[in-house]
Image 1 (cartoon, rainbow, N blue to C red):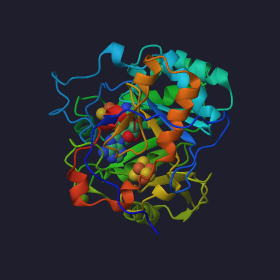
Image 2 (cartoon, protein in one colour):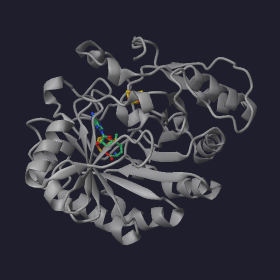
Image 3 (cartoon, rainbow, N blue to C red):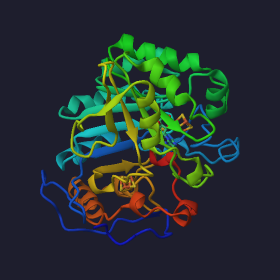
Length: 359
Ligand code: SAM
Ligand code: SF4
Ligand code: SF4
């Protein structure tokens, strides 16, 4: 049974009320019994791409009010928070954005997080800065990398990123990641019907047998600026059927509880693909993800309309005990299930942009 819909328009951030103190090491569960396990950290709201489904040019133009440097959480602030999160169940960190490789010195943040030990460190990037960054990231202790690539033909790829970056730049990024020692790269492709869905097979053919895993993502109604409608979504089932018609696939077990991508293996042993079906097969029931925005707001769902202001606590001098209590209050009160209750009305409502909240 699913919870009663909780979706409503509210302020974009709220002060976290004082809560009871919590013991170091206590694990947190939300109102549906979901544990806190993953933290996605947006280190910048800026990007060198203007993907039509994420940061459309018409909205994210020259005058867009991106965050100013003092607004951003510093690496010291992020590191302090991650230490606290890891005391309370977080095991996996994803560094994202915006384009995380635009944040100067991001490898120092990774090194600081790696030094804590016990965390799986991953990063999602559009890949074009990897030729100069991949080795630094590997040396800093990054465990895994995900690179986005929405088409292999030039015209479609340029149409998707909308700033004329060529496919070759991303392929060079993937190669640089391989050379730096990231053995198995995940390649994210957002599929939009009649725009790039012909590229589903192009990517399957290109990456089959390479050791890398293409993950096909259903186009989502994140934020309020990408003009989402259901007709633009290509259901994952259709993607699996299309690929399977040429290269037979079989379902593979999840690697761990709550894995977002559903795994499908090529029957001839040439590797696997993943599909992320946020729209057609909600996976809220096992969602253990929390998001920390570029300026230190906590979001308990990708589709949230309200953040919880951790930065003001941090900068107001809160001690660790107060911060632990605040995080506990936020997670214990979590009821999110957006993908289970999505309608045309919720899709049209004002939500936080993905580049800010962290994809
Ligand atoms: N800039 C980096 C990149 O593109 O990989 C990291 C941030 S981006 C917001 C993270 C992921 O979210 C990317 O794989 C991107 O394709 C995906 N994404 C962005 N907007 C989306 C949407 N509307 N629907 C589905 N996936 C989306
Ligand atoms: Fe930038 Fe990534 Fe969004 Fe594309 S998907 S605009 S690369 S943040
Ligand atoms: Fe998690 Fe929200 Fe996505 Fe559901 S809609 S899986 S709660 S992020």
